[in-house]
Every structure is written in structure tokens, then in C-alpha cells.
Amino acid sequence: MAESRSFVLSTKKRSGTADHIDGGDHVVTKKSMVSSTAWDVNPEAALAASRHEFGEHGGVNMSIEASATFTVMEPETMRRMFGGELGPDRDFFIYSRHFNPTVLNLSRQMAALEGTEAAYCTASGMSAISSVLLQLCSSGGHHVVASRTLYGGTHALLTHFLPRCCNITTTFVDINDLDTVRDAIKEGETKVLYFESVSNPTLTVANIPELSRVAHKKGVTVVVDNTFAPMVLSPVRLGADVVVHSISKFISGGADIIAGAICGSASLVNSMMDLHQGALMLLGPTMNPKVAFELSERIPHLGLRMKEHSRRALAFANGLKKMGLTVIYPGLEDHPQHDLLKSIGNKDYGCGGLVCVDMETEERANRFMNHLQNYTQFGYMAVSLGYYETLMSCSGSSTSSEMNAEEKELAGISPGLVRISVGYIGTLEQKWNQLEKALNRMQDHGLFS
Ligand SMILES: Cc1ncc(COP(=O)(O)O)c(C=O)c1O
Image (cartoon, rainbow, N blue to C red; front, side, top):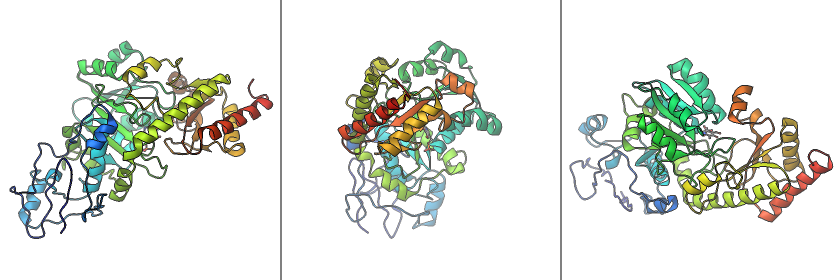
């Protein structure tokens, strides 16, 4: 069997004859079961410095470990693995609903990206969010304080599903108002403060350092959904405890995969994988290793993609504003958290790839998107984000439709809000011309002045 090679940390390679578990040249032990070896303030630098796993035959890419189950060479090893004595840090794997080497490799990349000690990937963003909330709220305290502006699915999970099924209740607040956040925390009951780094769809930027300070003073764990701003913001580096991602978006970049991740301390990830008490192990939102491999090939160019998404989003936001439209983009100086984002954002990644245009009514929003897709081929009417093509949706009637009219109003979601995930296909000039042409046509039809 060929030798496995890796930078930074080598792992024990299982021999065909015996489980060498008592030391030897190939065994490097670590304190935690899973951990990232890289930490840097720049996410791209951290990724480049993280462990690189080579293929079984010396391939530049890791081999895909497509096994559901793993052999042991000695019967005693099985008992020691199930007892927690031998784990993936020493290349001992039990079963792929538990740790899988290829999923663990992607998870190490996610941990490096977010500057966390550990991470683990899941089958979807929603499974990452629900599993981490269930894990954190499963002991002493069933209360969450959450931003009232959240992705519709997360809002529904907190409003309907968790109270009904698990007696976990949520108080929704305006996270811009720190006093309200402080007052909503019930000491001894609140376990989690939950918000999005950049909110879906209103693009409000969270003051992560201040919110973390408020929560930590009361012993509350801060969980941040960083789906809208990978590379742009690093919530854990800014004071949060846990980051969740819908990898289905920018991190994948291909609009072809549904996936998620939980990034946090090694003790959190290990507790979630616990054979008796772990939400990941017992609820089983498992990522397929073939999917993990594909995603691990995309993360190395995430930084380049985010820079280009941001560069084009800023150009379009400026252009649309000049044409007199109501534009929401954190890169514009009139955005309420523009200065905050400049002060807490990672340098060089811009202000993200999402721009919102408020067309006031759903009818005008629909006409706008129709022109952009069917008349000028600027982008596609589709939910989701982070794709190389531009995607557009009217949030109130799509990804935020789980919220009722009052909840939408409180969250600042106007019926005509069009969320645009700016792609990078084609030239910027070509795409701007398509956008301008659609708007001129709307002007000709008297749909805006
Ligand atoms: C901010 C945010 N978080 C989480 C999710 C859920 O992710 P997934 O669709 O991968 O389950 C979404 C989906 O749109 C989202 O926009």
C-alpha cells in the first residue's frame, strides 16, 4: 500500500497486517480528535497553510474515501475506537456517518477558512444550523435570541419547528439595537445568540464584536451564519463562537450541490459526533465523500471568486444608484453599516456579491427580473446565490415567504425587494449593458422615471 503524504501533519497509514496503535514512525498524535493546524488573519493565507492531503498513489489531489465502513486488523481495535480512545487523528475511522477521511479533509479546509479549531461538513446548510442549535440547546436552557432578519428557512425552524418539536423557543430582536439584544437574553435560559453576518435578504451587517461581547457577558454562545460573506467576514476571528455555512452558495460556486458546515471548537465538533449524544452522529445529516471531494477542489479558488463577485457587485450598485434606483449594498457609503464593514471586514475581499434593488411593488420587481432574464440575458430568475451566473429573486415571495407580512415588515423586506447575486461570467461591460438595456426598456414603459 502506498504511503500517504501530507504537509504539516502526517497521519498514521493503516498497514495490511496490524493496527499499529502504540506509536511508531507514522503516528502523530494530537490533543483533539479533529483540529485545524492553520490559523491566520487572512483566510486565503490560512487555507494555503493548512494541511494538504495527497492521493494514495502520490496524486496531487486526495483520493476519495468512498467507503461506508472501515476494517480493523485486530478485534481489540474496534472496542478502542468505540470507546473513543482511537479516532480520526490517528487515521482510525469507524463508519462514514461518523468521521470520513474525505469529509474530514474538506472540514479542515472550512476550519482554516473560518479560523476555527475544527469544523465538520453536513448534507445541507439547514442541517448544519438545526444540528448545532439542537446540540447547544440540549442541556440546561432551551431559549435562543435571534435576529429578526434571517433566511426564511431558519426563521421557520426557530418560529415553528423547534418550539413544536423540541420546546426550544426564540425571541427575535433587531440586532442593531444592542440594548434590546441584552434585554432579550434570559440568564440561565438563553443558550444561543443567532444571527447572519450579512443578513438574507436585507444585507444588514452584524456588529459581530459588540454582539459577541454582549452575549459572552451573559454566558451565551454566539452562532453566526456566514453564508453571505465567506472570506469577506471571519466571525470567529471577530469574537463569535461558531460559524455555520450553507456551502451550497458561494463556497460551492457551481449551483449544483447542497451542503453545509459547522465551524467551531474541537470540543463542539467532537460533542456533535459523540456516539451517544451527538446531533451529527445521531441525526445523521451526513455529507457524501464524493461531494466532499468536489467541494475541496473549489475552496482553493474561493478567494479569487469572492473578489470578483464583490468587484462587480460594487460596480453594479454604483451604476444602479446613479440611475436613480433604491439600491442596498454594504459597499455603498450610504449603507448604514458601510463603515462597520470596512472596519471589521477582511481586506481585499470587498463587500460581498449581493446587491438588492427595491422596486417597491412585487409587480415591478417581477417585470424587472423578467426583462433581465428574457430580454437582455443578464441573469436567471432563481433563488440561491454564489453562482458564476447572476441569480435574481424577489425575496418576499420566495426565500422569505415563510415569514408573515408583519415579520417581513419588521425584518425590512419590502414586497418589491429584488435580491441579485452578482455572477462573474462575461465581461463587466457586457453585463452592465444588459442591465442598462433592461432598465431603459422599463423606463420606456413608464415603470420608473
Ligand atoms: C443565509 C442562509 N443560510 C442557510 C441557508 C440554508 O442552506 P441550504 O439550502 O444549503 O440548506 C440558506 C439557503 O438559502 C441561506 O440563504
